[in-house]
Image (cartoon, rainbow, N blue to C red; front, side, top):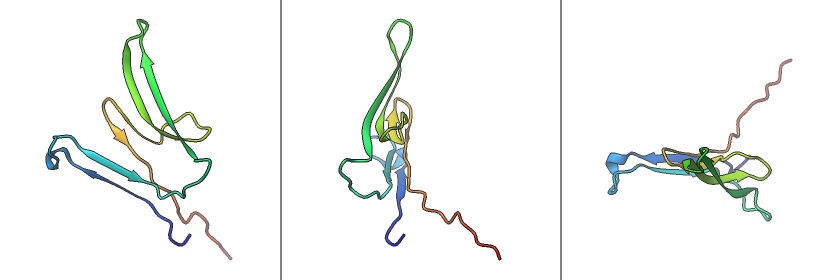
Length: 90
């Protein structure tokens, strides 16, 4: 695919003014209508309805998973996986 690709990068906490790391994730996907991603928030509660963990991010349409997001403790991203996964043998 000509012109396709993606990138992710991170800046360590010791290199930022606020002392927290910065994560950027750009899968280089085309803008589509309707979009292929939707915003997603997941909250894990205990038996007393107290929040144990919260996650927020974007998920591919139709999948109950967050592919690019943040939680109370960490962040994660994804990139496009354009790989050569076919070989021809004679």
